[in-house]
Each structure stands twice: as structure tokens, then as C-alpha cells.
Image (cartoon, rainbow, N blue to C red):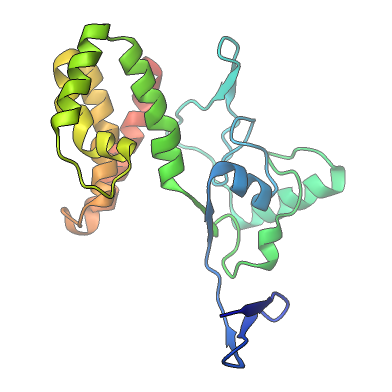
Amino acid sequence: MCFEIDLEALRFEVERIQQSFNIKVYGCIGDSPALKLMSNMIGHNGYYPCYYCDIKGVHIRKPRKRQYPYTPTSNCRTVNSFYVHSREARLKSQNIFGHLGISILEDVLDVPLPHGIIIDYAHVSLLRHFRDVIRVVASSLAPAVRQRIDDSLIKQRFPHFFHQLKNLLLYGFIPHFMNYLTTDQLSFISLFTIGIRLLHADSVFNHTTSVTANNLFRQYYADHHKY
């Protein structure tokens, strides 16, 4: 089946049916490189890279990366600020709070920016952050300990449709690493693990499930500099 999208009329036509459909586009999801291009903003390792807030970030010389310290009250981007700063960036041809110009999504989405930008959690949580956590933790353990953990993970049954990092995050990390980490280290990483599990699970705390997950993530973010 073939179809054509008319962006001007916000509809698409299906060739075989010969019927037009009006569509509503509520959001665009993708990994950071894709969203960077579509939003016309700076990359995730630059200053002011967040699509939702105005945290500038701090340059760390040794790893030559930017980090974004936790602040309890961050300034969130608004529909108005996103609109104004993107146009200022285009007019001046320079970076304005992370904006490099006007986003192509403005002509596509029916939800105003930045609300229409959806970050792909799998890339942010699993392929980026949790992978780095595993590397740091594993490098701190003796080779013999890592081998024991590998052997025990091989014996554990996981859902066949889960990604390996997802298996490790949701089911494997806490039970297999708990005997080799300090109480503080285990408690810290558990904030992230349990927060992700709450987002995957049913509403175990009714309407407060997402609130509980958010509180765990905020505490994890606040304590991140200690570890």
C-alpha cells in the first residue's frame, strides 16, 4: 500500500482506497542524534542540550565531556521560549541556549515544541547511561569476581524478547552484584533500577506510580556526583 503525505493540508492519501485522511501528529520520538537534527539544536554533549530545560552544563577537562549537575529547581523551556530562541538563533546564526535555528518539526507536529519532542528511553537509559554504569562498576571489580558474576548470569533465565542490557538492568544487576558492592553503592544504583522497573510495571501504586518513579530518579540524579 502506498500513500502520500500532504504537509500543507496535514493529510495523507492512500492510493488503492482513493480516500484522504486528516491526521494529527502528537510527537516525534528518536535517539539524540536524530532529535538534534529535527529540533535544530546542539548535540547532547554540548551546552544547553536538553530539549526541556535550560541547564547549561559544565565542561570536565579530564574526560573532555560536559556534565549537567543536579539542581532542584531547573528552568524549563516553555512553548514561548522555544519559539523565541529558535528564531533568534536563525536571525543571528549562532547558538542561543542550545538552539541553532527553527525546527522542521514546527510544520509537522500538532503539539507545540518542546512538548512534541519525545526522547527514546531505550537509547538514553540502556545504550548510554546504564552501559556506562556497568563499565565503571565492572572495572572496579577483580577479574575473578567478574568471572563469577558472568557465570551466574549465564545460568539465569531471562525473557527471550529482552535486550541483554535490559535483562541486566531489570533482573540481573541487583541480585548478582549486591555481594560485591558497598551498601551505599548498591542503594544508589537501586534508585535507578527500581525507577525504571516502576515505569515498566503496572500501576502498582495506582496513580502515584509515575510520581514514585520520578522521585527515585530525582534522588539518583541528586546523588550522582558522589559516585
